[in-house]
Length: 332
Image (cartoon, rainbow, N blue to C red; front, top):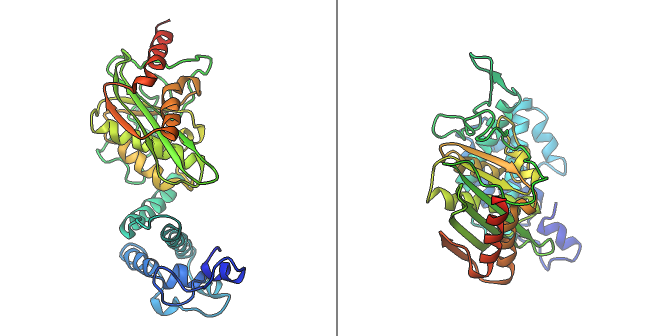
């Protein structure tokens, strides 16, 4: 693990003392057991999970983790490992980001993650009419209906489905429905991300458009998920009717399939996306080609070169021609 002590041994750090609490060397045990946020998260999770007593969470040598896990039941072992994994995430967030991740949010994430792992293995169930329906797992169904109410989606496409890529332009939704297109520009070296999003109705009228600098991400997939989340949050503030979210990232579309459990490293963002999707009367996520997602792509690319912007009912003047071209192709 990239602890401060291990970096110090390799002359990558001038000292090994923990920057977060200042109470000792930051080795593996300190990072996930002894440090401030790790202790706080463990205290929070004891209210929901059965965990070993604090007396058993002591350093007993290089094999402390094996000694800790050995007498535990398999279910408790799994929860301990998930807890330590999230503790390291909190430590890493403090070291490399702003350290704003809340302990309470991490506790909620762990509870939902285990719930999805528990429920997700059941696959699909059949209703009284013999039709398959998505399992409502993970607490994401805030309003008592399926996150994606129609088993075949809004226009006959399955959730997470890939639309016809032979169409080389944006495709308007059916009347009474809004399409949200999102895209991200990700810089591998720095982790910087930039988001672009645009929402339009069946006539092609713009509901909003945005182009902004995003959070620092660890992968292109996380950047795409953050862009989708940003777009959904802006759209739900203006509109909560039926909607289709389109992304050119197949990975994100597949991870958001109804009735599946996710083991993705992007799970916290995906969980937030599901919460936002539940705010709409009906919601569907589709994978589309780059050409079908062109306006969102241009907005994300714009954020790399210019200041962020958010416009209601319009797009930036420099992208007006691209918007018109999208509408002309859609009408052909």
